Length: 235
Image (cartoon, rainbow, N blue to C red; front, side, top):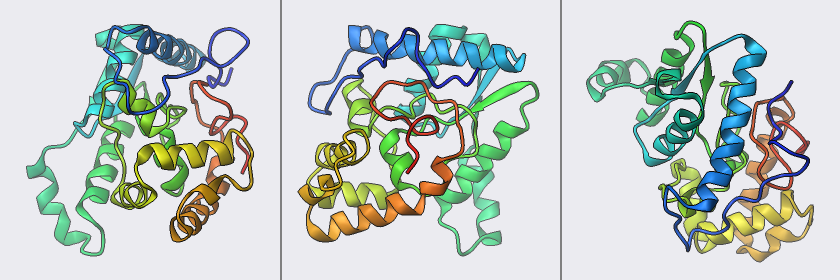
C-alpha cells in the first residue's frame, strides 16, 4: 500500500497560517502527528522494516518530524542521519562550484542510505518541495503535505532554501507565497499566482514547472491537504 493517505476517508486539515503557533500538545499537532504516524507505520510494514532514518540537518523542522515519528513508532525506531561541521569542511574544496549547504545535504543523504534495514525520510515541507526542483530521493516525506506556514504554526521554523526564502520575502511573507501556491495547486486556479508581484509570480511559475516531472513519481506523503505531492498532484 502506498502510504500517502491518512486514516479514514478524507484528508485531515492541518493548521493554517504562520500567525498562530500551536503547542506541541495542541489538538492541531496531534491531528497531524496521527496521520504522519499512521502512514509511517504502514510504510514500514509494507517494506518489512522496523526503523526510519531521518535526514536531520539539526533544524527545528527536522526535530518536528522526528518528534511525530518517534511518538508513533517509538524513539528506538527513529534513527538520525547527521553530520558535524568538521566532517564537511575537508569536502568543500572537492566541490568548489557547489554551495556548502548542498554538500551537507548530499552527505546527510549518503548517511541515510547507508543505514541498513531502515526507511529513509526527508522532513521537507510542501512549499520547499514545490519550488525546490526535483523531489528528494528519500521515499518518505513525513511533512510533505504541510506548507511552510503550517510548519511554523506547529511551532517550528520552516526549512527553506535560500532561493525559496528569498522568494517568500519578495512575495510579502511566507503566508502570501503559501496562499498563492495553495490556490494554484489545491484550488487549481490558473490565476492564483497573480496575487503575487509580477516578477515573483513569473519566478514561482518557472520553479513549479522545473520540478513538475519529478513530482509525478510516487513518494510516501501523509495526506493532509487538497492535492498531495506524489499522490494526486500531477503537474
